[in-house]
Image 1: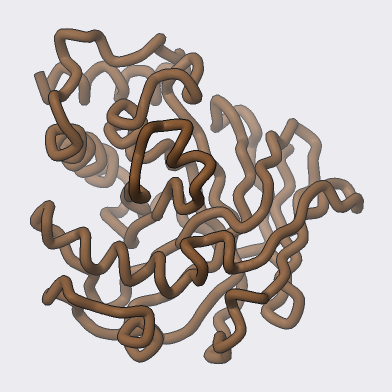
Image 2 (image 1 turned 120 degrees about the vertical axis):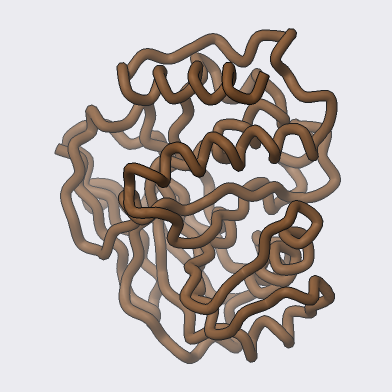
Length: 255
């Protein structure tokens, strides 16, 4: 079953042809089964794209959790070949969709294997914070209807991640305001408290959850911690800027 799903979604990715979803007979019975398939799928993709760069956290606010029937977030893998530094241009046709999510990102400064961490522990375990944009993409025809397990399988709908310069000052992230501008016009805004109350709380959730699935944060890993604004579906030709105030901008143009 795992090989079948890996083949289905990998073919969709390479041929640029979406699929309705994972067939019922291949669907896992629980979240652990979904992560088993995600691991096989992401390892397959990473093997030809530079390996892994870290992790992404998804569904970090109550509204999407309620919509998906979840009580906590879920995670996916960052792959080196789809991690970029801002500013840059990307070919819009590389993505089925270009859902823009401004997010706080961190680089891990030490191995974290115990699985019993607090937000305060996380503050002492990162090299710094970066402004970032995750580009959410999905191999499914309608990602909002396939359910949580299918989203987990599809590497948590990760398409790409770009980041700005690192800062070592992040005491006020819960109240830190972020604005998303498209072609010079603000389309949405938010602040760090949208992410489980504080981005470092989301990071602690990830550090404590990964060991349950045989994984762990390691020194040098990047982690992007979840969207802090509303979503924007970018179109070809859009210039997208996530403004993180004192932390700087992240810019991408879809040509």
